[in-house]
Length: 80
Ligand SMILES: [Zn+2]
Image (cartoon, rainbow, N blue to C red; front, side, top):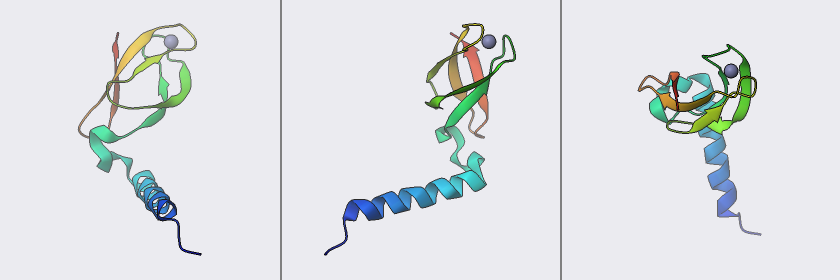
């Protein structure tokens, strides 16, 4: 049985994710987050994965933000 090429692609992707976990800032603006701290009420919000220019809503106070990732891979939120 020949190897499924999709499997190899998936394995490579997984490897890249591992590398990114070691040093997520190397991704810069491509870095993805799955949680954020609300600047308005300071609540910690687990969220579906989001990145630069995505929109997030605080589950506690309902505030709405546009995500901005800096070139250094830092998460910032702008009120939307
Ligand atoms: Zn909030």
